Image (cartoon, rainbow, N blue to C red; front, side):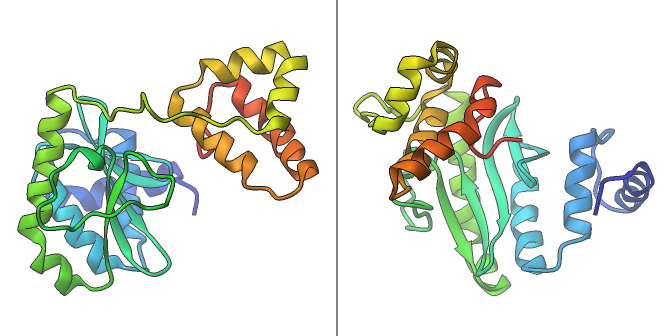
Length: 218
């Protein structure tokens, strides 16, 4: 459902009846609308949201999901997956996670770590451990710590090397991307089995690369 002005005003009214701190930005309002229209994993995500909102974070809305930030730095994110509700921590790889709650969302994930829940009871049982992880993530952000990617070599698909060799504009734009965005594209291009498919993917995403955007960014 599109975020019409009428719907945004309606959500502002609903929020005014509950917990609210200060004036909501547009992003905050879109997050309210996200939760208001939730169907899958509603109780689980609301429980996870309550934990995050009890921490010194700002609730935003990015990439079609609620994102929790500290001075504009992304700290945590909530997802409604097909098989679970998930709380992701952007620099989760730096956490101690003594309770073993967090896992890498994929085999190529270097920084993000997630906790997955299939029922609201498990969220309640892990509430203190989850909050401890989030608070540690906040301290990591305040300290300016970063995930070390220095030893992580990037393997460019041959089709990308050839295309950048004859397309200086694409090469300059690709090299200007953050390491994470570059890696995302390389993994996506290389995952195609056929050379023709890899070439087609590079052509498809060329405008997005020139715009300085990542694979999943709109």
